[in-house]
Image (cartoon, rainbow, N blue to C red):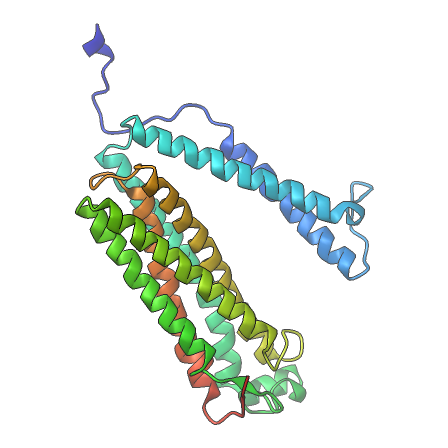
Length: 294
């Protein structure tokens, strides 16, 4: 009788779950709260179905954010539980990897949009000045009156920090494959520490930047590209910190560690994007431009 009910395939049919619905609901509420928050910040009304959402913008956004975070925690906890129960077979693990690859590919296209905007205005500043008013660029790039950051000061420090963090997470990965628990924990701890350090250096850079987001198209493209990368660094640091806690709890084994592998892939993606940002937005765009010394 037991053999009759034994699973004869490599697939896993998950139990009915509330998390997809809650994730959608939380994201919708958070989006409404975010729009209402921005409307209220500009002194505008935001009425939906006769309700003025601008009056409760912050709390609406906070409720949506809480639902999203709770759903993320619960959904991933279920996934970890399924792995411990042996449901992550060879085929299931392969599909999880395909999902992570597609997610990183979508993130890559997200950054392509910011690079496209940057190169559009930087390679054709004269054309941009004719279409969007001459004061936007003055026909040159960087625009007239803009002092750029020294690429070989804080940006270079952050480049070194990220490259070292990529080395550390690779060390942790190899330690895991060799079942070296101590090396795994120390490698992840070093990676998390370097990720936090990167964020602090970038925050300091932003606070002392000689230009602002709203002052010029240079500031807008600079802060959008580097700011979203900084957000990804924060997300990746949290991702790796959770992996550190799981590693300390003994969750990962040399044969089953997709959670760590996904975090490592994400972190290497963040590293590669930063190399492009550093090369083009910091170094290439600063050639011939006045440098602001911090």
